[in-house]
Length: 137
Image 1 (cartoon, rainbow, N blue to C red):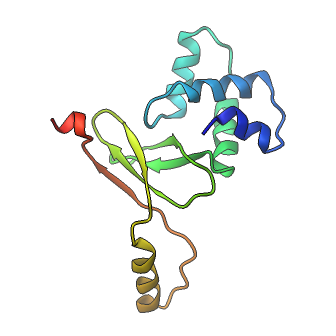
Image 2 (image 1 turned 60 degrees about the vertical axis):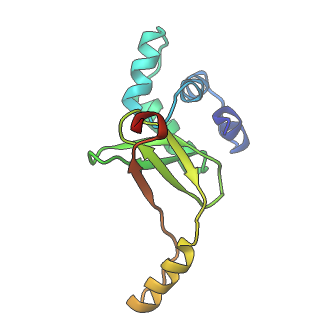
């Protein structure tokens, strides 16, 4: 997903700082944190505030262009993804590579859990962690 297009499509002001943040996201491989983006900006001598990075991440997550994921360490990160399509993520715990995976029948399991528990489940998300093909070789 092109994060610049997502910002523009969401009707948000395209400030220099937001464009810079979106461009930095576009250079990332796998999951990343706000701190990663700030380090990238400093390394490139770009002036961007921490608050702007966090606000831009929140905007993009609200639009579905990013998802916030929980890492095995308990920290959180972001991953760029296709907006408005229900999916899950697999994340390599070594290199950070991530991939979107289809629901693969999980919706039926969620419905069954709702029936057994008496809950009306209206959403779910799943993150799977392990080693990608390159790291497990």
